[in-house]
Image 1 (spheres, rainbow, N blue to C red):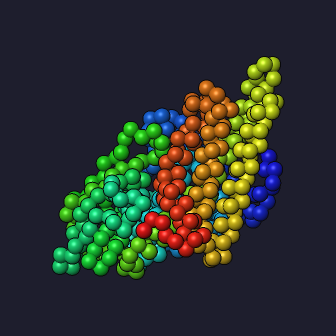
Image 2: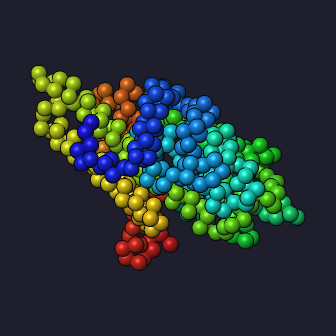
Image 3: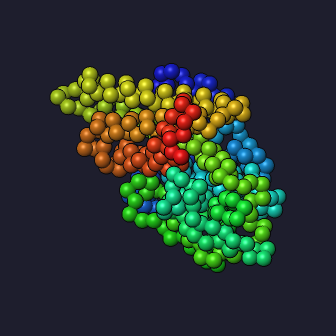
Amino acid sequence: MDDLLRIDDRLNPDQRLIRDTVKSFVADRVLPDVGDWFERAVFPARELAPVLGELGLLGMHLSGYGCAGTDATSYGVACRELEAGDSGLRSFVSVQGSLAMFPIWRYGSDEQKQEWLPRMAAGQAIGCFGLTEPDHGSDPSSMRTHAKKDGTDWILNGSKMWITNGSIADVAVVWAQTDEGIRGFVVPTDSPGFSAPEIHKKMSLRASVTSSLYFDDVRLPATAVLPDVVGLKGPLSCLSEARFGILWGVVGAARACLESAVDYAKTRVQFDRPIGAFQLTQEKLAWMYVGTAQASLTAFHLGALKDAGTLEPRQISFGKLANVRAALDIAREARSILGGNGITLEYPVIRHMNNLESVLTYEGTQEIHTLVLGEALTGLAAYR
């Protein structure tokens, strides 16, 4: 499908190479099987992680420790192409790099960095991020998971929910209440008292591992604490990193749905004509392209701000809110063009549409990002 606005013309040669490399990987290693993964509710993380590491995609926007050290736009482009394959694939890369590796890289000790980051960058170790709890999603300041000092050790108790990679992770970055405020802990998942049962019966993000985390008197040494951050600043900065990848990634999902709808409209014949020749279908396709292009332009603009070091969390909220909403609307419209075929996994549309229902909610719900923008406009916080 033509890039009518020539949006990708703004990519430099290195960014084009990343785009084409990731697109080829998705075409060769993901698209032939992802419908089956979705149907069976599996994700071959251990098989794919080393390949993603070889491609330099894990923690790619970080520097040192085997990380690629790319710019933010390159990371965004990679997320776009990964999510054109499946949101679960992009979620795996996003959680690994932005939620598990980033806090160790940004707030960890030299020992924590040396122990975990090279292996995580290579895909030899998998990480997860424990913030959301069963009763506290949008309000992490009220988390009940807590850590108490016992001599020089810490004793961790509590639970987390909706944790991507949880049951396959080698290490969990867990946020807990302490007498000093909210602290982050680097928790090896083979620690006694740690368990991570997988969450089943999902109708969305089925090609993704989602788990609960439970901590029953998990004893951690003093060296498990992330030393350079106290308070919600830590986990919220990680979420900003991940949301940046999301606002790029959903452009890929939207584009995949649009491309599927265009191809179908040109070949599906009704009343002796391709349905793409009917005005109603062309109007749908035109607005779907407008939405995809606008979301892409938003992603590029925010990428430029991040590369310049001026991107603000409320701007990320704008991108996450606007782009996910646009992608979901495009997926739903594509489903209508495909008719009954739109609900089968022979086409990618229903898979993307179901996945985007989760993306709309995780990393900050639509409502929370709306209120972030409302506060930015009025100076009044509606959720406190």
